[in-house]
Image (cartoon, rainbow, N blue to C red):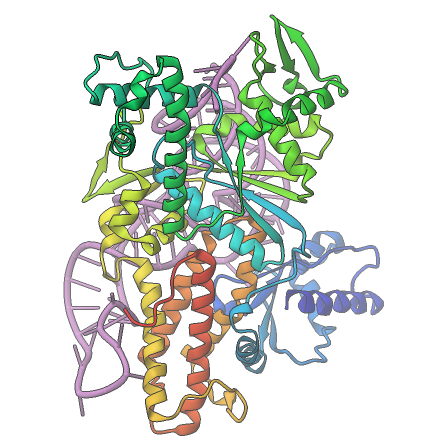
Length: 554
RNA sequence: GCGCUCGUAGCUCAGUGGAUAGAGCACAGGCCUCCGAAGCCUGGGGUCGUGGGUUCAAAUCCCGCCGAGCGCGCCA
């Protein structure tokens, strides 16, 4: 629609120039926006105000010249007005809006899908929790945001891959193995000193206990070093399986689980470094090998190979990103917690040092999550292992509420998760509000089916009968859905979906209060059933993008 | 100290160059003989942290200051 209006306006400006009302030298690309208030029409443009400075004429006069030359051959406008300081407001005809109902019927769960991505390959890497312990609430947020973003990009026409990077290498893993080994020996009555920097959480003991339950105390015979190495392997397996299970409980499925260790084993790191050597951004200092990331806006240069010959995490990450790019992705999207934002410049620098444009990689930084219960902040500490895990949260509030809540806010703000609110089955709780609208419509449709009224076919239905304000408001909102998908996908802000879902649910409820769907007028019943079923379809589609269920009863 | 993110109604947040700055919650009052009241309607409530600048137009862009969160390893 925006394109249609732009074409109309551009032509009008052209004709105004020919008529000598606007100087030929003027040049402008019309920009359209949706006015906040519907009394200002469905679309508005500011071209007249932009042109005013070029033409040295008052903006309203320029607007008049343009409006005069608008030639709406296809007649999708009902009215064009000049308002305020020089806005041109466009009012679309009701007839045009009613066409969307037919479109929704036709496209069904594909309504809202676009081809803006043109099949480009996009990878979304998210969660990537270290497999050394349970996932925290922040991981839940990245999971909800990443999965919804992946759904959105798919709907927008991209070819999307969901990927989880498994940090199964390095010091952290070693400490993890030692921690489990120590607890294992401790439970079996050995006198052990728990590693000073070891993982304190209760779950370490649980893992150790599980191993004892299954295989007894036979590993006590191993040396301490062997034990740590051995326990690292089996305990890591357990944790990773657990992570997969919890994510699956949330409905999040990854296409690729990429192991950091595989980069070390395949010599991918050496290859990446030797490629960087050719670019002259590599230098040696203090016995270590460095990458000059300061050449690309980083604070300081970074070590790739330590003095002891071991590659750093950063070196592995460079190899990982090089691997991603070699796999042919047109765009990489990483979702990271705010505690990693200091790492952004470094990785972007590496992308450029490898010879790729910086915008190949988009990094979304998500702020962390605080848990509130009954008006009180739940304190958590990683060090002592005292925390509420994602698994516990899912058990308590359910996947739908958790996902919806995690999506509700912009990732730029820290999120206060109110666990009582998420659990409450009342209108305070937005997820119920939206789901209720869907269930309510399903109930109406069941009722209509019993009466023999319902037909999903628009043929023979007179949609012109839909002319109440609340009906037209609802239709307008339905027609907005594709645009919501477009902006949320292009700006990569899935939280927009929650607001749209709430607006749509609200407009349905208003309609429902004002208009009776199943009444005495059979023709009107049919038309309203089409409207209501379209609303159900779009609610279902938007909830689907968010990964939240659309219940028929609740 | 430096960097990133943020500061909008009592609370939680939308609004990222346009018109009178919005929503939910909370608070006060109203609406079910009829398709789901988990709903709807009405009302009060604001120095957009602060001081400058750019612009026809600034909550939005730029600079300073104040305040909050996070980061600043040859950890991952």
